[in-house]
Amino acid sequence: MNDVSDLYTRARTWIGKEAGKPTMARDVVNVPMIRRWCEAMGEENPIYVDAEAAQAEGFPGPVSPPAMLEVWTMARYRPGGRLPEEGIPVLNLFDEAGYTGVVATNIEQEYDRYLVEGDRVSYTAIVDDVSEEKRTGLGIGHFITIRYEFTDQNGGPVGRMLFRVLKFKPNLAQAKAPATESAGNEFPHPRPAITHDNAHYWEGIAKRELLIQKCSDCGHLRHPPGPGCPQCQSLEWETVKASGKGTLYSHVTMHHPRLPTFDYPLPVLLVELEEGVRIVANGIDLPASDLTIGMPLELDFVEVEPGYLLPGFRPARTGG
Ligand SMILES: [Zn+2]
Image 1 (cartoon, rainbow, N blue to C red):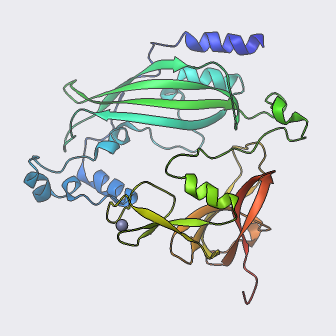
Image 2: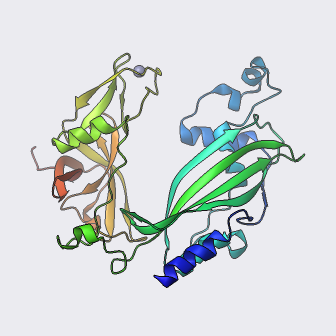
Image 3: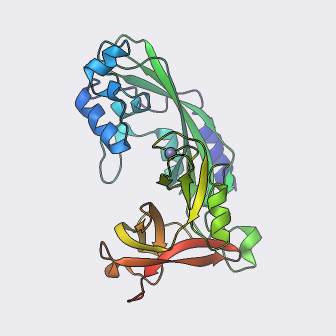
Protein backbone atom coordinates (compact mmCIF):
# COMPACT_ATOMS: atom_id res chain seq x y z
CA MET A 1 0.00 0.00 0.00
CA ASN A 2 2.90 2.31 0.80
CA ASP A 3 4.36 1.57 -2.60
CA VAL A 4 1.10 2.48 -4.27
CA SER A 5 0.63 5.80 -2.46
CA ASP A 6 4.30 6.57 -3.01
CA LEU A 7 3.86 6.01 -6.74
CA TYR A 8 0.83 8.29 -6.70
CA THR A 9 2.74 11.02 -4.83
CA ARG A 10 5.73 10.80 -7.14
CA ALA A 11 3.53 10.82 -10.24
CA ARG A 12 1.65 13.89 -9.04
CA THR A 13 4.89 15.87 -8.75
CA TRP A 14 4.85 15.82 -12.57
CA ILE A 15 1.63 17.86 -12.76
CA GLY A 16 2.31 21.16 -14.52
CA LYS A 17 5.66 19.96 -15.87
CA GLU A 18 6.59 19.04 -19.41
CA ALA A 19 5.45 15.47 -20.11
CA GLY A 20 8.20 14.98 -22.68
CA LYS A 21 10.40 16.87 -25.06
CA PRO A 22 8.78 19.48 -27.34
CA THR A 23 8.36 17.85 -30.72
CA MET A 24 8.36 19.23 -34.26
CA ALA A 25 6.65 17.47 -37.14
CA ARG A 26 9.06 15.56 -39.39
CA ASP A 27 7.15 16.72 -42.47
CA VAL A 28 5.39 19.92 -43.37
CA VAL A 29 1.68 19.69 -44.10
CA ASN A 30 1.43 18.09 -47.53
CA VAL A 31 -1.24 16.71 -49.81
CA PRO A 32 0.17 13.18 -50.29
CA MET A 33 -0.06 12.48 -46.54
CA ILE A 34 -3.51 14.10 -46.40
CA ARG A 35 -4.68 11.96 -49.32
CA ARG A 36 -3.55 8.72 -47.68
CA TRP A 37 -5.20 9.67 -44.39
CA CYS A 38 -8.46 10.60 -46.12
CA GLU A 39 -8.47 7.31 -48.00
CA ALA A 40 -7.86 5.34 -44.82
CA MET A 41 -10.59 7.24 -42.94
CA GLY A 42 -13.14 7.28 -45.77
CA GLU A 43 -13.04 11.10 -45.80
CA GLU A 44 -14.21 12.45 -49.16
CA ASN A 45 -14.44 16.22 -48.71
CA PRO A 46 -12.54 17.55 -51.76
CA ILE A 47 -11.16 20.67 -49.98
CA TYR A 48 -8.52 18.41 -48.41
CA VAL A 49 -6.94 17.29 -51.68
CA ASP A 50 -8.20 19.47 -54.51
CA ALA A 51 -6.93 23.05 -54.94
CA GLU A 52 -9.92 24.24 -56.95
CA ALA A 53 -12.44 22.88 -54.45
CA ALA A 54 -10.48 24.47 -51.59
CA GLN A 55 -10.25 27.84 -53.38
CA ALA A 56 -13.99 27.77 -54.01
CA GLU A 57 -14.38 27.68 -50.22
CA GLY A 58 -12.02 30.64 -49.75
CA PHE A 59 -8.83 28.75 -48.87
CA PRO A 60 -5.52 29.40 -50.66
CA GLY A 61 -5.18 25.69 -51.46
CA PRO A 62 -5.92 22.26 -49.99
CA VAL A 63 -6.25 22.26 -46.20
CA SER A 64 -5.49 19.55 -43.69
CA PRO A 65 -8.48 17.80 -42.09
CA PRO A 66 -8.63 19.22 -38.54
CA ALA A 67 -8.60 15.73 -37.03
CA MET A 68 -5.11 15.23 -38.55
CA LEU A 69 -3.71 17.77 -36.06
CA GLU A 70 -1.70 15.22 -34.09
CA VAL A 71 -0.85 13.10 -37.13
CA TRP A 72 1.81 15.56 -38.25
CA THR A 73 3.82 15.19 -35.05
CA MET A 74 3.33 11.49 -34.39
CA ALA A 75 6.42 9.49 -33.54
CA ARG A 76 7.48 6.88 -36.01
CA TYR A 77 5.92 3.49 -35.33
CA ARG A 78 8.46 1.00 -34.01
CA PRO A 79 7.91 -2.58 -32.94
CA GLY A 80 8.72 -2.59 -29.23
CA GLY A 81 7.62 0.96 -28.62
CA ARG A 82 9.09 4.42 -28.55
CA LEU A 83 12.75 5.30 -28.24
CA PRO A 84 13.79 6.47 -24.76
CA GLU A 85 14.07 10.09 -25.94
CA GLU A 86 10.48 9.92 -27.22
CA GLY A 87 9.22 8.60 -23.89
CA ILE A 88 6.95 10.22 -21.35
CA PRO A 89 8.68 9.92 -17.95
CA VAL A 90 5.49 10.09 -15.86
CA LEU A 91 4.19 7.05 -17.78
CA ASN A 92 7.52 5.28 -17.28
CA LEU A 93 7.00 5.58 -13.50
CA PHE A 94 3.88 3.45 -13.86
CA ASP A 95 5.60 0.94 -16.14
CA GLU A 96 8.36 0.48 -13.58
CA ALA A 97 5.76 -0.11 -10.87
CA GLY A 98 4.08 -2.86 -12.92
CA TYR A 99 1.28 -0.73 -14.37
CA THR A 100 2.27 -1.80 -17.86
CA GLY A 101 -1.19 -1.89 -19.44
CA VAL A 102 -2.21 1.03 -21.61
CA VAL A 103 -5.64 2.05 -22.82
CA ALA A 104 -6.00 5.39 -24.57
CA THR A 105 -9.16 6.33 -22.80
CA ASN A 106 -10.08 9.52 -24.55
CA ILE A 107 -8.83 12.40 -26.62
CA GLU A 108 -10.35 15.86 -26.98
CA GLN A 109 -9.05 18.22 -29.63
CA GLU A 110 -9.71 21.90 -30.35
CA TYR A 111 -8.68 23.64 -33.54
CA ASP A 112 -7.79 27.31 -34.03
CA ARG A 113 -7.41 27.31 -37.79
CA TYR A 114 -7.05 25.05 -40.81
CA LEU A 115 -3.50 23.93 -41.52
CA VAL A 116 -2.36 24.57 -45.09
CA GLU A 117 0.41 23.11 -47.24
CA GLY A 118 3.82 24.11 -45.93
CA ASP A 119 2.73 24.61 -42.30
CA ARG A 120 5.03 22.89 -39.86
CA VAL A 121 3.42 21.81 -36.60
CA SER A 122 5.13 21.54 -33.22
CA TYR A 123 3.78 20.66 -29.82
CA THR A 124 4.58 20.99 -26.17
CA ALA A 125 3.03 18.56 -23.71
CA ILE A 126 2.25 19.28 -20.06
CA VAL A 127 1.14 16.71 -17.47
CA ASP A 128 -2.33 17.94 -16.53
CA ASP A 129 -3.51 15.40 -13.96
CA VAL A 130 -2.85 12.03 -12.32
CA SER A 131 -5.91 10.39 -10.79
CA GLU A 132 -6.14 8.42 -7.59
CA GLU A 133 -6.04 4.67 -7.99
CA LYS A 134 -9.11 3.41 -9.85
CA ARG A 135 -10.45 -0.11 -10.05
CA THR A 136 -11.52 -0.79 -13.61
CA GLY A 137 -12.59 -3.80 -15.62
CA LEU A 138 -9.03 -4.09 -16.90
CA GLY A 139 -7.28 -3.85 -13.57
CA ILE A 140 -6.29 -1.27 -11.00
CA GLY A 141 -4.75 1.81 -12.48
CA HIS A 142 -4.43 5.54 -12.71
CA PHE A 143 -5.71 7.93 -15.35
CA ILE A 144 -2.99 10.29 -16.57
CA THR A 145 -4.05 13.39 -18.51
CA ILE A 146 -1.60 15.21 -20.74
CA ARG A 147 -2.33 18.60 -22.34
CA TYR A 148 -0.79 19.25 -25.73
CA GLU A 149 -0.46 22.72 -27.26
CA PHE A 150 0.12 22.78 -31.02
CA THR A 151 1.76 25.72 -32.77
CA ASP A 152 2.84 26.53 -36.31
CA GLN A 153 6.28 27.50 -37.66
CA ASN A 154 5.75 31.06 -36.40
CA GLY A 155 4.82 29.98 -32.89
CA GLY A 156 1.17 30.81 -33.47
CA PRO A 157 -1.39 28.50 -31.81
CA VAL A 158 -3.16 26.08 -34.14
CA GLY A 159 -4.88 23.75 -31.67
CA ARG A 160 -4.71 21.78 -28.47
CA MET A 161 -5.45 18.29 -27.21
CA LEU A 162 -6.27 16.61 -23.93
CA PHE A 163 -5.09 13.01 -23.94
CA ARG A 164 -6.22 10.77 -21.11
CA VAL A 165 -4.70 7.33 -20.77
CA LEU A 166 -5.34 4.55 -18.26
CA LYS A 167 -2.13 2.92 -17.03
CA PHE A 168 -3.24 -0.30 -15.39
CA LYS A 169 -1.75 -3.30 -13.72
CA PRO A 170 -2.73 -6.51 -15.51
CA ASN A 171 -1.86 -8.59 -12.48
CA LEU A 172 -4.36 -11.14 -11.21
CA ALA A 173 -2.88 -11.67 -7.77
CA GLN A 174 -2.69 -8.02 -6.85
CA ALA A 175 -5.76 -6.78 -8.64
CA LYS A 176 -8.25 -9.29 -7.31
CA ALA A 177 -11.69 -7.75 -7.29
CA PRO A 178 -13.25 -8.44 -3.87
CA ALA A 179 -16.81 -8.35 -5.22
CA THR A 180 -16.26 -11.40 -7.40
CA GLU A 181 -13.79 -13.24 -5.23
CA SER A 182 -16.30 -15.67 -3.86
CA ALA A 183 -17.51 -16.53 -7.35
CA GLY A 184 -14.03 -17.84 -8.10
CA ASN A 185 -13.76 -15.34 -10.90
CA GLU A 186 -10.87 -13.09 -10.03
CA PHE A 187 -11.46 -10.60 -12.78
CA PRO A 188 -14.67 -9.45 -14.37
CA HIS A 189 -14.83 -9.48 -18.13
CA PRO A 190 -14.37 -5.95 -19.49
CA ARG A 191 -17.78 -4.45 -20.20
CA PRO A 192 -18.78 -2.18 -23.05
CA ALA A 193 -19.46 1.49 -22.41
CA ILE A 194 -23.21 1.70 -23.00
CA THR A 195 -24.22 4.99 -24.55
CA HIS A 196 -27.33 6.56 -26.01
CA ASP A 197 -26.05 5.51 -29.43
CA ASN A 198 -25.30 1.83 -28.79
CA ALA A 199 -27.74 0.79 -26.04
CA HIS A 200 -30.08 -0.82 -28.59
CA TYR A 201 -27.26 -3.06 -29.79
CA TRP A 202 -26.47 -4.42 -26.33
CA GLU A 203 -30.15 -4.82 -25.48
CA GLY A 204 -30.41 -6.95 -28.62
CA ILE A 205 -27.39 -9.03 -27.64
CA ALA A 206 -28.95 -9.70 -24.23
CA LYS A 207 -31.94 -11.19 -26.11
CA ARG A 208 -29.65 -13.21 -28.41
CA GLU A 209 -30.33 -10.93 -31.37
CA LEU A 210 -27.62 -9.24 -33.41
CA LEU A 211 -29.16 -5.96 -34.54
CA ILE A 212 -27.78 -3.97 -37.45
CA GLN A 213 -28.59 -0.27 -37.68
CA LYS A 214 -30.50 0.72 -40.82
CA CYS A 215 -30.95 4.28 -42.03
CA SER A 216 -34.67 5.06 -42.19
CA ASP A 217 -34.12 7.48 -45.05
CA CYS A 218 -31.76 5.76 -47.50
CA GLY A 219 -31.76 2.20 -46.16
CA HIS A 220 -27.98 2.03 -45.68
CA LEU A 221 -26.90 -0.59 -43.12
CA ARG A 222 -24.17 0.32 -40.66
CA HIS A 223 -22.11 -1.23 -37.87
CA PRO A 224 -20.77 -0.42 -35.33
CA PRO A 225 -23.70 1.65 -34.08
CA GLY A 226 -23.54 5.39 -34.48
CA PRO A 227 -25.82 8.40 -34.33
CA GLY A 228 -25.88 9.30 -38.03
CA CYS A 229 -25.93 7.72 -41.46
CA PRO A 230 -22.52 7.94 -43.17
CA GLN A 231 -24.25 7.91 -46.58
CA CYS A 232 -26.95 10.58 -46.21
CA GLN A 233 -26.31 12.06 -42.72
CA SER A 234 -29.84 11.20 -41.58
CA LEU A 235 -30.30 10.80 -37.83
CA GLU A 236 -33.35 8.56 -38.29
CA TRP A 237 -32.70 4.86 -37.96
CA GLU A 238 -34.22 1.48 -37.25
CA THR A 239 -32.70 -1.96 -36.86
CA VAL A 240 -32.75 -5.22 -38.73
CA LYS A 241 -31.94 -8.56 -37.14
CA ALA A 242 -28.89 -10.22 -38.66
CA SER A 243 -29.43 -13.69 -40.09
CA GLY A 244 -26.24 -14.79 -38.33
CA LYS A 245 -24.61 -16.03 -41.52
CA GLY A 246 -21.27 -14.56 -42.52
CA THR A 247 -17.78 -15.19 -43.75
CA LEU A 248 -14.37 -14.55 -42.26
CA TYR A 249 -13.14 -11.28 -43.78
CA SER A 250 -9.93 -10.94 -41.75
CA HIS A 251 -8.42 -11.93 -38.41
CA VAL A 252 -5.57 -11.27 -36.03
CA THR A 253 -4.32 -13.42 -33.18
CA MET A 254 -3.51 -11.55 -29.97
CA HIS A 255 -0.53 -12.70 -27.93
CA HIS A 256 0.25 -9.53 -26.00
CA PRO A 257 -0.72 -7.66 -23.91
CA ARG A 258 -2.52 -10.34 -21.95
CA LEU A 259 -5.67 -9.16 -20.24
CA PRO A 260 -7.27 -11.18 -17.50
CA THR A 261 -10.27 -13.40 -18.36
CA PHE A 262 -9.16 -14.05 -21.94
CA ASP A 263 -7.38 -17.19 -23.14
CA TYR A 264 -4.28 -16.74 -25.26
CA PRO A 265 -3.39 -16.93 -28.07
CA LEU A 266 -6.68 -15.10 -28.74
CA PRO A 267 -8.01 -15.04 -32.30
CA VAL A 268 -10.05 -11.91 -33.06
CA LEU A 269 -12.28 -12.17 -36.11
CA LEU A 270 -13.57 -9.59 -38.53
CA VAL A 271 -16.71 -11.22 -39.88
CA GLU A 272 -18.56 -9.98 -42.93
CA LEU A 273 -22.24 -10.62 -42.33
CA GLU A 274 -24.36 -11.65 -45.30
CA GLU A 275 -26.19 -8.32 -44.91
CA GLY A 276 -22.92 -6.62 -45.90
CA VAL A 277 -21.66 -5.06 -42.66
CA ARG A 278 -18.63 -6.30 -40.76
CA ILE A 279 -18.34 -7.05 -37.05
CA VAL A 280 -15.41 -7.76 -34.76
CA ALA A 281 -16.00 -10.80 -32.57
CA ASN A 282 -14.34 -13.77 -30.96
CA GLY A 283 -14.46 -17.23 -32.42
CA ILE A 284 -16.18 -20.20 -30.81
CA ASP A 285 -14.50 -23.61 -31.12
CA LEU A 286 -12.24 -21.94 -33.61
CA PRO A 287 -8.49 -22.05 -32.89
CA ALA A 288 -6.21 -19.73 -34.85
CA SER A 289 -4.87 -22.67 -36.87
CA ASP A 290 -8.35 -23.32 -38.30
CA LEU A 291 -8.94 -19.79 -39.59
CA THR A 292 -9.15 -19.33 -43.35
CA ILE A 293 -10.17 -16.09 -45.03
CA GLY A 294 -13.61 -16.49 -46.60
CA MET A 295 -14.63 -19.49 -44.48
CA PRO A 296 -18.37 -19.58 -43.74
CA LEU A 297 -19.26 -18.77 -40.15
CA GLU A 298 -22.42 -18.67 -38.10
CA LEU A 299 -23.42 -16.54 -35.17
CA ASP A 300 -23.85 -17.87 -31.68
CA PHE A 301 -23.93 -16.27 -28.25
CA VAL A 302 -21.59 -16.99 -25.38
CA GLU A 303 -22.55 -16.32 -21.76
CA VAL A 304 -19.12 -15.16 -20.61
CA GLU A 305 -20.46 -14.35 -17.13
CA PRO A 306 -23.86 -15.02 -15.64
CA GLY A 307 -26.27 -12.74 -17.49
CA TYR A 308 -23.61 -11.25 -19.75
CA LEU A 309 -23.74 -12.41 -23.36
CA LEU A 310 -21.35 -11.69 -26.20
CA PRO A 311 -21.80 -12.56 -29.86
CA GLY A 312 -19.28 -15.00 -31.30
CA PHE A 313 -18.86 -16.99 -34.47
CA ARG A 314 -18.32 -20.70 -35.03
CA PRO A 315 -17.64 -22.57 -38.25
CA ALA A 316 -20.86 -22.92 -40.25
CA ARG A 317 -22.30 -26.40 -40.29
CA THR A 318 -21.96 -27.85 -43.75
CA GLY A 319 -25.14 -27.65 -45.76
CA GLY A 320 -26.47 -25.00 -43.37
ZN1 LIG B 1 -28.96 7.21 -44.94
